[in-house]
Length: 95
Image 1 (tube, rainbow, N blue to C red):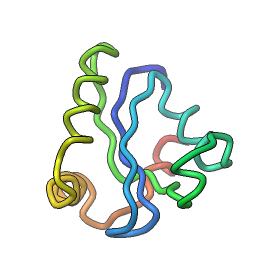
Image 2: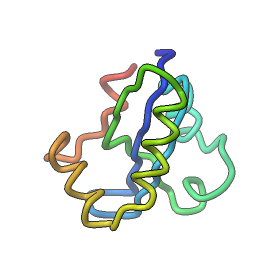
Image 3: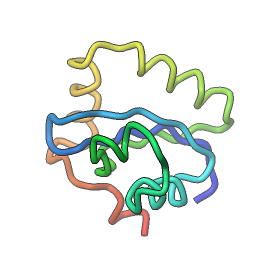
Image 4: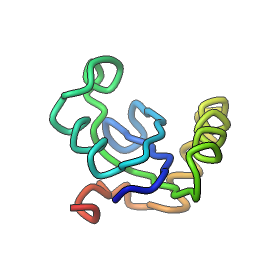
């Protein structure tokens, strides 16, 4: 799926969160799942895709990612809960 997207990964329900942006969501999430990306998500086992937001262009996706990263944790949890109240791993819907 090659379309700019902002995504949030979680270690578990209400666990550690990571917000990212990509032009190829399926490829990026697979990289996270397989621990191919060094850094925060690998170190803290943050692999569950809990939120996705698609954009028409990368510039707007990057702007939105930066906005979400500045948010308080409670706001991020509320965003996730609105789209994914059961905290399902949305990866299954991408494959």
